[in-house]
Amino acid sequence: MSKPAVIEVAGREVTITHPDRVVFAAGGHTKLDLVNYYLAVAEGALRGVRGRPMVLKRFVKGIDEEAIWQKRAPTKRPDWIEVAELKYASGRSAEEVVVRDAAALAWVVNLGCVDLNPHPVLAEDLDRPDELRIDLDPVPGVEWRQIVEVATVAKEVLSDHGLTGWPKTSGSRGFHIFARIEPRWLYKDVRLAAETVAREVENRAPDLATSKWWKEERQGVFVDFNQNAKDRTVASAYSVRPVPDARVSTPLAWDEVADCRPDHFTLPVVLERFQAGGDPWQGMDTSHGTLDGLLDLAKRLGPAEKPPKGAGRRQSTMPLVEIARAKTKDEALAGLERWKARHPSTVEKLEPADVLVDGMRGRSSIWYRIRVNLQHVPEGERPEQEPLEVDYNPWEGMRFPGADGSGD
Image 1 (cartoon, one colour):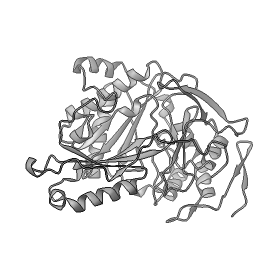
Image 2 (cartoon, rainbow, N blue to C red):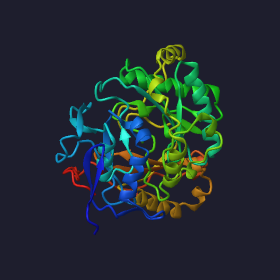
Image 3 (cartoon, rainbow, N blue to C red):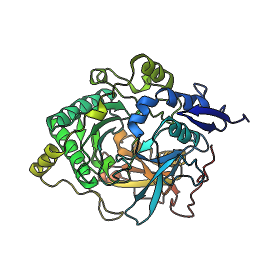
Image 4 (cartoon, one colour):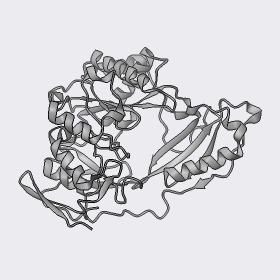
């Protein structure tokens, strides 16, 4: 096991534990490589996280295992690590880490944070976001070209209503557009504005995009507005995502969007790109706009579909069967394969979007639910709901590990 490395950053000493531990086996990138990447792009990375409370998404067993979502800052932390106390609807509260400089950035990466997940508020005002976030989430089978077409429509909707959209790849299947806003509105208003963007994008491009809340009813690219709800976080700009090729959530200029490919923007590519051309989002901090136009449009559009307020309160209009609730995605997918093996004639009739794989936020980790929409199976041939292939209870016996501040 390698000895800790002590690096000097922003006038502070930061200890990197297990610096030679390989995080991304395919590219051979170590933990120290990851820290050095974030320090090299710190100007851009800090633009996305500076002054914002952050959930620590810690990969304590490597990127092949589920992350621990740690809201509370470790009790053992340097006295220069800032925290802000967030209060939740449950009545609980948590002091979350607030990154201000490159030293704090290196410190959170040392904890096992591969990507960075800040809230859309600043520590000085935890109730009024200064950022509106649009997450373009394609249903299975949608091609990348359609996603960037929807991104262009979303840009136009934002621009038409007084906001500047800043595009980036998500580093996963989707695409993000952020817009800085004046911190005048509460979360509910920001979420309503984002929902209005989604509805207007669907109005302008109904064959490409959807704003439907219920996953089984979506076709095309879902314009996900709920990332603006309180307690939601999104991977920030320059975040390295926990996938084998070390893909990065990469800020772009709009003239790059049409021809971009998410798999192109890996850690070494983005590092070279940043060193050569700087940050395409450099003007973001002076682009704050107003929500007045979107909130006025919301009134003209009228009430939207109400989101769910709890499990079991809505009867789906689609013929759904639930397959698995599992601790890991691999367990859930293995259960799906067992179900498929018993129902081969049903599987032949399914479309890619009929298999619904949901990552569900638990108390400190993600668990997985799989359902199948039988809409393309003739009614008389549809399998009945069966006992779950995997029946995991994410709330049973949960503890909050990894909160002692040690590096991973």
